[in-house]
Length: 498
Image (cartoon, rainbow, N blue to C red; front, side, top):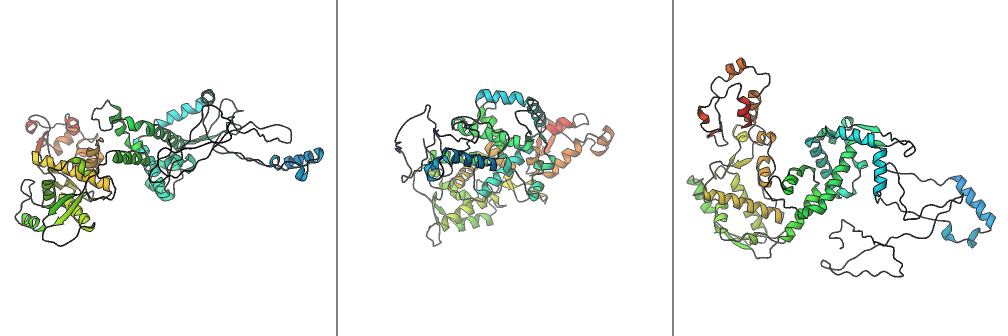
């Protein structure tokens, strides 16, 4: 198979050497128009003969180069020896084939044979154990910062992670402030000391950041081949797809995007635009009457939802990124939908979700309490649990899919606790703090390790029970009969876990 885009070159190796005068390349499949560039590489019979008569290995031999680079120097003595040799055999000037005077070589990283790998592993066994011990202190946050920095770098430079080398991991001073776990001052590095000193005379520098990057790059290259065969939508914790979703912070964006783009292409559906008629006057009347509930509101979101109830899901999966899923008409308003009307309608439909005039979503507690942390974010209303409200939430998910497929970047204004729930990621305290910082502060005070029993009783007394207030202010029991179960100094940690 050949390449599928203009960013990657595909290499194929023949199992055995071939002798041929011509090579024919015959394309069997192509996209839009045939365009091909191919290069053929192979060993040749020529050698470079040095002044001492020694010959270099042929192109099929593996030369182990320790470290990250090497230096080749043409010495003055070698040039003088070659001149003397020319004079001695009388082959000066044009009598000697010009090809014997010049040569070129190509360095290709092809890896080491298994036996060579085993030899190097044994040689650097102490260093590997040291790296393994230091890696125990490398946590999820460090991986997240490393992958985030790599993603920003490859996007800014318009390149792929396969072209990124460990030596490229050089953070600017401003980046060191943003990615503090990657600060060179905090990253261990040392000079390797192999058992056999003749292997590397001057030793190699080992940088833990480089080692971790090499590990993540190897992981991503293996996942690139395996991910198409993994069910990432599974909800079973023991399945590989579920475990890989939890490792999402270790997967580079270009791999994710390649997988996403392929999935979008494979599930695309060719269909016409869905007619959609929206009435601003009906929306205004609904707001004036205070109709906020999903069952009686007539905002543009509800109007679009009602007209799409009988639309098949496949009709929303357009094949073109810039396609218009809906053909929009505003009742009583003149306008031809050449693109602008569609964009305005989609933006208004999503904006209605983030409004005090529609109760399917509500402002998060940080916004209610005016805490400057996601204070403009909206979360699902706990009271929106009727079958109709569930259908509307499913329609919100369909609109997210439309936004993703058509690259419309619709203004969904949700916090991380919502997005993680959508993709099945585990929610942590940081996500909860992003919507209710006051709750986290009260839990931190309640779980303080220095809080004595006397201080607890003086501060909380019998006021705390196994209940909590959800995002709309309603009281919820954490255990059966929790309203009558008092939280004590001994049971406070159980209360916090729940």
